[in-house]
Image (cartoon, rainbow, N blue to C red; front, side):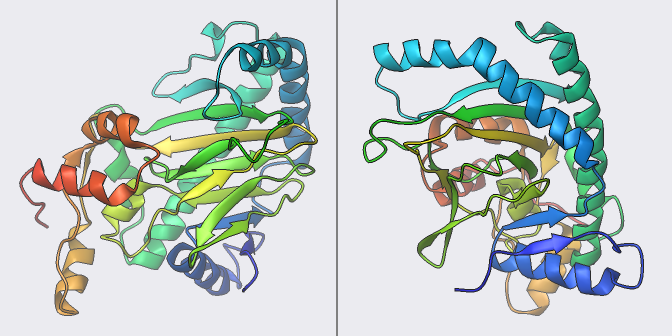
Length: 306
C-alpha cells in the first residue's frame, strides 16, 4: 500500500506551491487524511501543549478514569473533556485547569485557527472556489465554531474487548490533531483495510469531516477512523474541530454542481442547517454516514442556486 501522505507547507507561498497543492489534492481525494510538517506552529509551543496536557492528565484525570473504568462497562476506553474557542471561549470556566494550562491552550488555539483558515483556502484553490468560500460557508451568523477535544487513551487490560474510540467519521469541517508521538493507535479505513496514522513529533494530522464532503458534493469525502486500545502507554490526543456555526446553512457549492452536471452527475447531498445535522449525528455517530445524509436529504431545505 502507498505511504500515508506527509506534506510540508514550508514553501506553500513560494515556488513549490503547485506541488504542495497537488499533494493536498491527492490526499483529500484518496485518503481524507494527511499529516502536516513545517506548518507554522512553533515546536516550542507544541512541546508546551504536550507537557501541560500530560501533567493535567496525571494530576486530575488519571485516577478518576481508573475509578470510573472499574465501576462501569465502557464503550470507548478514553478519558476526555472539551474546550470551546469560537464563537466564544469557555477555557476560563473549565474546572481543574491551571493558569498555565489555560494560557498555553489559548495560544495554541489562535495558531490552530490561523492554520485552519490557511488550509481551507488551499482547499478552495484546489476546488476552483474563490478564496474564503469555505470559511464563509461555515460562518453562519456568528462565524465558525471551533473547539478542542482533549483525550487520553490509557493502557487497556483487554484491548480485544474494547476500542479506544469506535469507528466513525467526524461530523464537522476540518480537524487538526496533535497526537502522541510515542504511543500509536489512530487508524483510518482505506480500501477496506485499517491503516495506521503514523505518530510523528511536532506534526499536525488533518482530516476532513462530513461537511466538507457535502460542500464538495462528494469530491472530497470524510473517512472512517478509530482508535485502538493499547496495553502499554497512555496516548495523548488533542483534536481541534473547525466546524460550521450552529445556524450555518450547508449545501454543495453551486460551481461544483455545475461541474458535476457537465460530467453527467447531479447534486448528491442535501441542504440543511448544521445544528440539525449535529442533532442527528449525536444519535448515529458510530453508524455509517450515508443514512445520515439520506435522512437529511428527506428533510432538505430548498436546493441551493448560484
